[in-house]
Image (cartoon, rainbow, N blue to C red):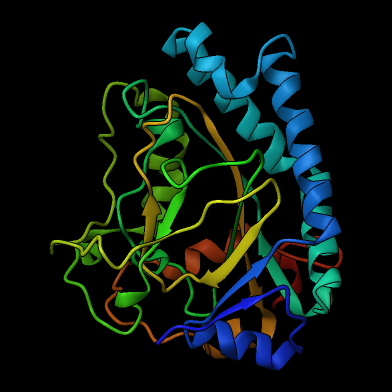
Length: 289
């Protein structure tokens, strides 16, 4: 059984314990999320222009130009101080102390119609746990659409597998290699996704999927140990979304978190170098000696 909490203010310790137990939290009324989406929309319009609905921009652009613009958009959004500030403000609004958390840089996902592009900068993630990619057990994920979406444009969670191991290839996957080599090469993959990803070796049940569809800024919060992935987008529109991860300092150092059912990626600690303290954006390496 997986519980869903909607717009509920949850004390710090209980918040983390619920997430680690598999609970899902939906926030649909946060002012900080609305502001974050407004900022993301400005970034999108700065890159693609405002003379066409950005959700239809793939109709106009050849794939090579689309990939170039998406890569520039991702770099601007991910590395801006404004994006980090929005995460800090989110933590404050939900009653968490930013001094107690690290954050990973936020990502803006741009997922066009599947038949147009589903590799590289717009890779459609197959069902996976983030622990297969080397995530810490205490990783708390967030995900929200920038524009309203339908159920055939979204991401999926599959709570059925939260406490059920899945045979997978994460033992062959190296986080250091991904960060140093594969992630920077995303824009080179257009016709097909040739970068290695940890994958399930089992058929995943689709009837137990939970598909999250909502308005701009409607956020789902969940453990990185949940099985999740990209729904094949056949809507004819581009899906824009924001996701970021947070980690409680004590839990990261003590290795507390959700139970790791089946992840065995290499060089997990290498990912810590990408983390920043949420209160002042000091890098992990400068805070933890």
